[in-house]
Length: 503
Image 1 (cartoon, one colour):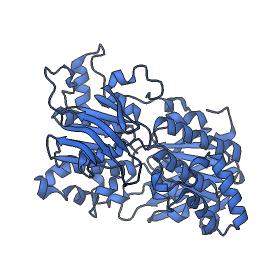
Image 2 (cartoon, rainbow, N blue to C red):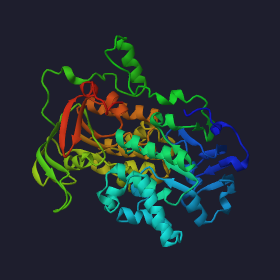
Image 3 (cartoon, helix red, strand yellow):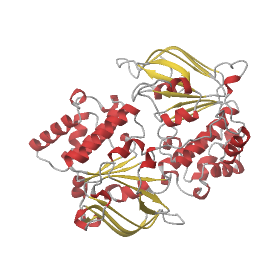
Image 4 (cartoon, rainbow, N blue to C red):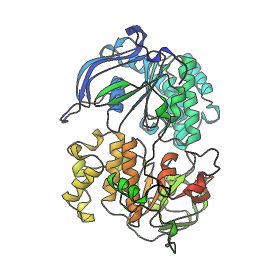
């Protein structure tokens, strides 16, 4: 924490960037409000963290502070930003004074090229051309974008897309910046670059920064204050030090403790009793999926994304793919899933029973309610309402079965999509950023479910930037670099002596 600033000291209305009083918000059709007589104030100039469980309402609260994207529902109470009632802000004032950066940059990037994306907001505000060019140039220099200023947005890595989303918001010089899980899809190095840029925005430009996050560890050194949203209300977090630590997802085995007690504790948390990893198996099974000398690119004249790549993963193991944004992890999953085919090389799968969870879980949704979503493939996969009800309970969605899937939080959508896939009992499960948007309880649920699937012989391959999850919940790790597999090793060996990729 940076010093003992006034970030956590109450001030007058003129000293507050955010002032919320008695806020009650209920989604259409919901039995109870997600925000219940909530009061919250954030001093101007703060770098504030907003933490809370999956589905606690963090995204709802932030979006209510940005009138253009406020969700539909019944709202009571008073919301003020930068000393003004939000109800009195014009669209132009809101766009100019309050910036919002989404968790997924693709949800807000609308132009084909980087330079046009930078100018788009200013064009809509009617900024004179000369001033527009100056603001775009200054902001681009601030973020070091000169080398990719003329690039096409679709060619950017995830890290650069996130920086572009931030830069194209800040070019309008907002006084309040709201960010929803902005580093969830960034690799560890890109995350540090992004947070350093955010720190400079806060310190050098005087912009109030509010970040909603499930993973605050890397952000605590920059924060002046933190708040927790729970039970529909906000409380200040007085001690930030616990936010720098991440508890275990699954109890450790072979650590000198009582194995029987460990197994009992794990079973009570929802994982199968026998969660020992199969390293000691007498003979390793044949690979569930194997790529040999695979090449792939997205266009005849595009650069190769994968080149001469060899990879294999085996049944009964959880195999993590790590590497920088744009390294080809998602492409590799798409090849294994059969969404795309290698241009050269070969792909062999032991079974056609496979499932892919993409980065955006909404792409697998097609129904009007959570319960119907899980029933969609029942005829094909041979399960019924009883199994659906059981899975709703396992992923913590029992009381939300009547809601539209898009009304769930990002983490709840992730768990719903996973449950939908697991109901089909795949033999090869491919996951792209599976822990994105999940709080600790939900991450433990995810880890236990994946371990259970692996123990029944499923091969699981997960592309992820979540190194805490990798270190605690996977068996094998492969690093993707320069279109190839740079290395593959058991999880413990991978992190031994690793300088940059560490949990």
